[in-house]
Every structure is written in C-alpha cells, then in structure tokens.
Length: 461
Ligand code: MN
Ligand code: MN
Image (cartoon, rainbow, N blue to C red; front, side, top):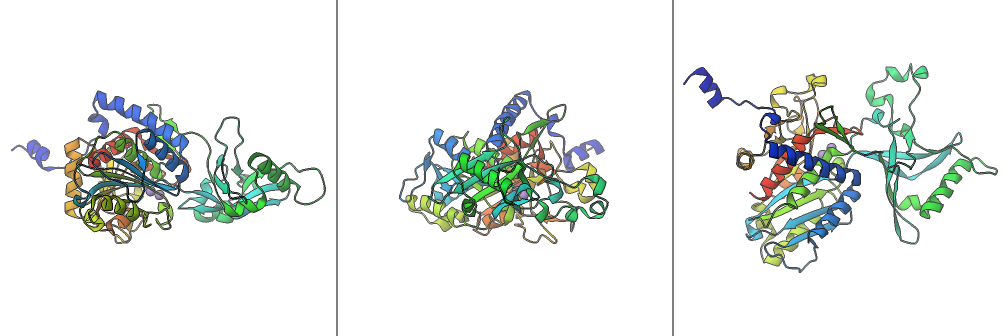
C-alpha cells in the first residue's frame, strides 16, 4: 500500500457535513429547520412543549395511557405527566420483554422563575423578584427583552395560562443594568458577581394610581392583572410564572446556516425525537420518546427523569403484554438526547480540539459527560458505543464524537445516568450548540437535521 492508501484505510478523517449532504437531504434539512423553528416559537417552557407534543400526537392517533389498556403492535400511546413532561410510545412488533428503543430529551430550559411573593414597589417602580432556574450567567439577563409565561391557580381552583410579551403589539419586560458612567466598581468584579441573583428584578411598570400611599404603582399593576386575568396578589402563592427571552427564533448567518433560539437546550433534541417518532411506521421494537422536565436542576421531582412516572407508563404497557418491566428495561436501549458543547474558536483554550464536536459535523455522540474524573457520568461501554456507531453508519447519519471540554475545566450532566440506573444501556448524543444556556443559543441546521435522523435510526434499530 502507498502512504496515501494507508492513510485512507487506517486514519480517522472527519469531514464537514456539507461535503456529504445530498441535494435531497439539503431540501429535507431546510424543511425540517422550518418545522423546528415553528415548534420553538410555540414552546418556551416545558408546559408549552408538552402541550404542543400532546396536541400533535393526538392528531396522529396517539391515545392517552390508562392502566389496563391494550398495547398491541402499531398502537400509539402517550403519557402526559401533569402537563410538564410527556412520554410517547409506538408499540413494536416484538414483545416489550425484548426491550424498547428509547430516545430521552428534556424540555425545561434555564430561565428566571418568579418567587412565591414576587410583586413589590421600590422608588415608584413595580417589580417582580425572581429566582433563577438552572445554570445561568446572571449578567446575560439584564437588558434582554423578557416575556412572561406560565400558569396561575386561582383561589377558586381554576388555572389561568398567562403569556405576555410575544406578540408584536404586546409590551416586553426588562431587568435594568447599571449605567457605564457609574460602573467603575461593578466593572472590576468577576463575571460571576457583576450581577447577582437578587439584582434580577423585573420592571413591571411605573405609573401610579391616583390617591395616597407608597404602593400606588404596585396597585396599578395588580389592577391590570386583575382586569386581564382575574388575579389577586395572593394568587402568586399558587403560580408557576417564569421570565424567558421575548421573541421568535431566527436564522443566523448570511448563509442562514444557523438558528438562534431560546432553549435549544434541550428542545432541539426533544423536537428531533418527536419529528422522528411521528414519521415512522410500526417498528420492530417498541419506540419510546421521552420529553422530561427538571433536567436543568438535577432531574429530580415528580416530572423529572428520576420520577417513577416512567415505570408507571412502561410498566403499564408491559402489564398489557403480560411481561415483566425488569425484562423490558434489561433489554432496552436509550439514546440520551441532549445538546453538546460545539467547539468555539473564540474560546479555544477550554476545548480539547481532538475530542470536541464542531458545528456542521453532525450529531455529537458522547461516551460520557460529567466532570472532574468522569464524576456523575453514565460512562457508556465499548459495546454500547459500538452499537450506536453501527446504527448511525447503517442509516447514513453524519455523526461525530464529543467530550465536554478539557479535563477539569468544568462539566455537565444529562438524563443518561438516570436511564442507565434503571438497567437500560444508555449513550449520550445530541446537537452541538454555541453559547449553551445563554438567553439565545446557536445551533446548525445540519446538526439539527442529523440529530432527527439519529433518533429515527435508534427507533428503527
Ligand atoms: Mn440539556
Ligand atoms: Mn442544560
């Protein structure tokens, strides 16, 4: 063999996905990006993503899970976990004791939640106090136009949905930052403390009602909330209201190759799972799509991936087939679909460039996440990685390997460990993104599309 032939035969040589994309695939990719962007504009919270998924699933004939129901090949069943998470299944031709092919993503994203008692007035300005949710760089949130999304359960037990700041004719809300002219001390602080959590106070209004008292601006805001939503101040005690960046997702770059959106992490993988599930016929093994909540704060709680809701759902399907849940889990495979850190040349020093994903190189497969000596990682086996590698290659999915930056620089986790703890073989994979957890994140259309194809390949494996 010549040196050139040897190099070709023996060496790994990743290539930009655009060098491999066919014309047909390019058309499909652009159509997929449009569908994804429409989903994102409708889904800025876990509740909205869950509602969107349930509505689309019902249109396609999915039925809500009830204990005791049948689970025959081709049956389409979903489990709405209290409007905050959802799992969907298409029952396969093989029995559930042979295992399921699962894709698991999360639909919660970092944001600013309102405190239980959020409304106050200071210096004749009305504010909401917030408590950030998930990992945020606090300095990124002031001066970002914000919208309010969520629900309030009123005293009479009825729940009202509130969305303000997304339509063109609606106001947005905003947190102030200090003017540069008086920032000489602030500018000396590290980024972590330049803006602190208790400064993330959202301006609601400045116009006082007529009358006497130090609460006339606050009262005017309460009057507005009462007129529009029937709220009184006490109703905030039974509310889930959250501040998210206002506005629609956008194409980015003169070549339109990227998408900026709030909450790519992890709705970009959630949508990939859904779009793939909705496109397949009855698979060999049961295909399961999970959109979980609470990943950003540790997957805990009733709607998180550690919750027994998953056992209730899959266990119920196993009961219908007269098989054991433990056998189903033992023979299942899970792609833990969550975003990856794309290589950012502007911050090159934190990445191990030989082991980092790059924009446009396809879905990023991760043997492990975690940090500091693989702590908290579900470290996939050679066999599990081999399985994914062959499934991706057989389906023609463009993929690449990823690790979360240089060792000891930081780290992160996903739902993978909680799936693997259930005795399910699990591998991490997802869309590489830039500025993860920022109010606006960037992902490439090509990688989004390849992640959808990856989910499809897993369902059909
Ligand atoms: Mn994530
Ligand atoms: Mn995250």
